[in-house]
Image (cartoon, rainbow, N blue to C red; front, side):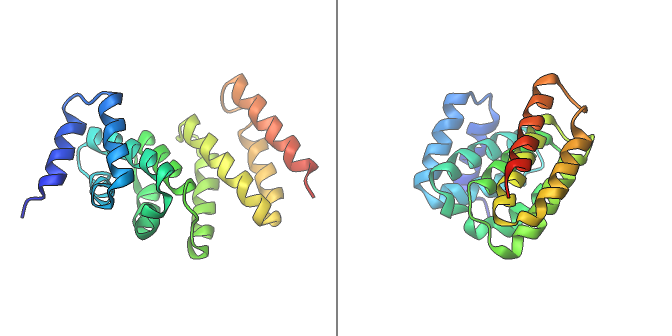
Length: 178
């Protein structure tokens, strides 16, 4: 059975959607749970363009309505680990970071963050989001501090000078925390 909302959103997102149209979809999803849920379905589409645009709209909508993501956290956790398109991974990271993850998912999310941070295949933007998420988890779980500092030293020279500066600042902040 066809889902008219899904088909309508997919048409808007795929047919040369510009930022204005994607923002409109995100705004609609932030005020309508059914639209939000449909975006979650579209993040799993076989078409890469659909996944990219719907994940961007999903992340934007989640900034406005983080509680909408609550029922989808299991799926998003699975997708972040299996998705190959780095732009989609980045947007799923942003979606998850905008929510309060249940404790049962924190360990897995932290593991994914460390894995993404250390992986040479991970885009710099995804590494940045991983670094930021891990830095925030250190506040809750101080025992992660040493592992994060070691991981950051490992990736220090892997990218551009601005990345190196950011990493050194993060290391400095971590070393100054108790």
